[in-house]
Image (tube, rainbow over all chains, first blue to last red; front, top):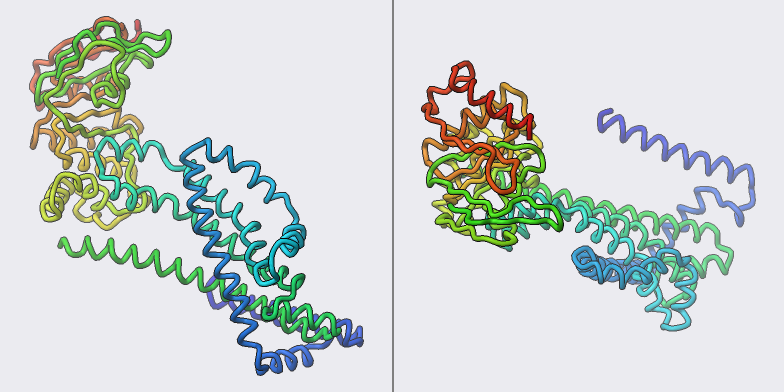
Length: 260
Length: 233
């Protein structure tokens, strides 16, 4: 299927979803339960023009980005160590297994007891995201081809060259998979934590306040904003990966072209 | 290279017991033998990957290049880089480029420098591995059944490619194979393992390499002898 056809189907499917919503909302005819599309988009416009819109968005994005970077850093470092040294994997196993099985809400509620409301989203996102990143990297290290490692050693390939030409490229798919999984989860946890702890600014706080005032159209508008944030985050990450891969291919191609 | 009273035990299993072997410089020693007969252990001992349980191995050649059963190419870099990276610890960039290009040209890969391993056929991948082994400044080459998984036509072409490169620059070579025919076509001398204390057969091949033919009576006789030994081992 070509790209245009694919995009057309996706567009029609999204339009179908909106039409379905509109039809059901008209049938229910109780705006507080299910507002029609008009009030939702109107509320969206009002929110976007509001004085605190940028601040709310900025704080949520900052929290998600901070959590993401901390998770990627810690997950990668501990994943590498655990993949390399079995004892570290064993020491971390109960911690990781517990985190994997703990409900998100329990983590958020406990964090709210221990920390101020602004720190809860960060802490909760870290605890929920760390196992994903850590396990991917640990698995990646375990899957490194021992035959290629042996070849590098037998040919006396310098450690730095081995790192950049064998180890890092072999771990990259695992790293990217870990980042993708973490990124798609982080927005949900950060916003859920904001909903429960209601810090001064944040998309989740606005959702909570709108729900308290029974402004269903505003709740749905902020939900649309949250969806857009997740989609834009994914898109930005994919663009980064695409650029990195192409730059690498371009550099290698140029080196070969320079030979002739 | 000399193995002097070399023993190698894996727990109770004795692979070599006071085994002696001299490998002449700049010659090809072809090693055949049954599975578990010590062929790979011999290569690992020669490369220094494993230490003997007792005895000594002395060699003039410090650097070693390896040609494995599978090509073992770095999957994320192109053909040229696969050869060039193995030279980084030994040469400056200009020299590395010249050497890598030289051997890739000899291996008939000049038009495939920008391709990645997944874009190559099995034979091309093994040719890259051959070029890499020769480009490396090693004076000792260890070959662990590098042509085994290929079909007969490709195998013959690659053996020819290998011998062309070897004639260009002769190096001390230990070539392990399951196939008596390969041993006979490539080796200056054939060793048949299967007994921990001494080879079952150790015979120099007097026929010049260029004159060897699978239908030649002398070659056929040696092949039959090796085949018989392998069947009995």
